[in-house]
Image (cartoon, rainbow, N blue to C red; front, side, top):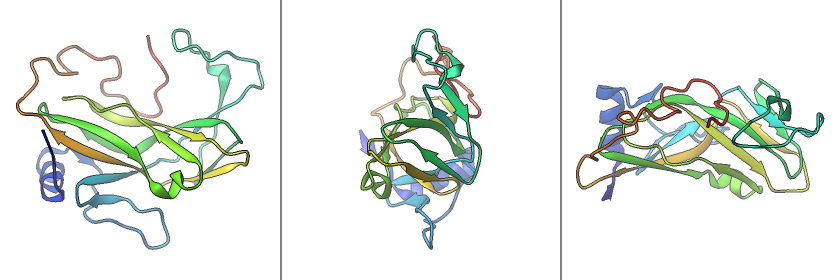
Length: 184
């Protein structure tokens, strides 16, 4: 298994629509960087945020998720309360090839501020907007900037195509648009 370079990412984005919209080169003047890098793609966070709150004493249960546990806060920035977290999504829509697995790492700019970005792997033939979790591990409010870099996706090529892809098994998060909440 090998990690795919910028030339492959660019080709797949332009010819196969693997990343839409695709940013050709890293942008970073006055913003948290995004776009294609040497061996990855730095995705942006959209203006759609869901901040978790305990105002209505909801319980976070992945089998019976209660929407009273968060508030919607669209905008150019999101302020995450201390020791809390928010859900968001990428600006980019991804279409993953059958012989590729994608892993995600948070941007160092956020990590150095105690803000952790978590994403599960993007499986072969999955597509959609990626739901992002931002955890504020600090005792202070933390700011997230919409339309700027949030995390880096690394594309790992398997030794061959998988027997059963995410699409083949009709995965529950296939084709998601917007911030997608837990499903059972």
